[in-house]
Length: 144
Image 1 (cartoon, rainbow, N blue to C red):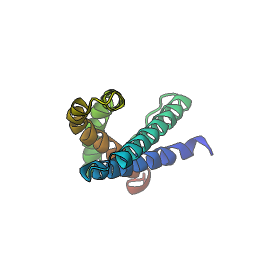
Image 2 (tube, rainbow, N blue to C red):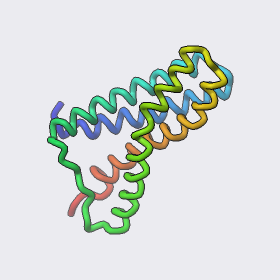
Image 3 (cartoon, helix red, strand yellow):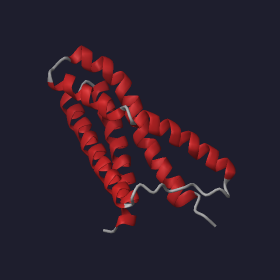
Image 4 (cartoon, rainbow, N blue to C red):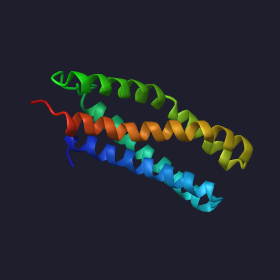
């Protein structure tokens, strides 16, 4: 694997995290607590692997940012709006997920449920938009 492969690998981890979050949510709605735990811990693992890959990529690249091609002005505005919301919310995800996990492991179910209602939609949005950002940058709007 080479450095230029990491964005695709990272997007795959984000996609897997999104699926695991959705399946974990479905499991808890069916009151299948054991399945819920497995799916959510899988989502944490996928998100953690994403973060390691993301930080490795940007550290190795020297902090250079991949710019969206300016020849697609409407798509660029949409991309920047998605990127802004993604980035702001992504800053909160590790803290939200950490607190949600802590409460789950301490078996403080009511507090866990309360924060999970905030954590899950934000985490799911960040994971999903990570894949969209990757697709927009590397596949849908390549420089001409």
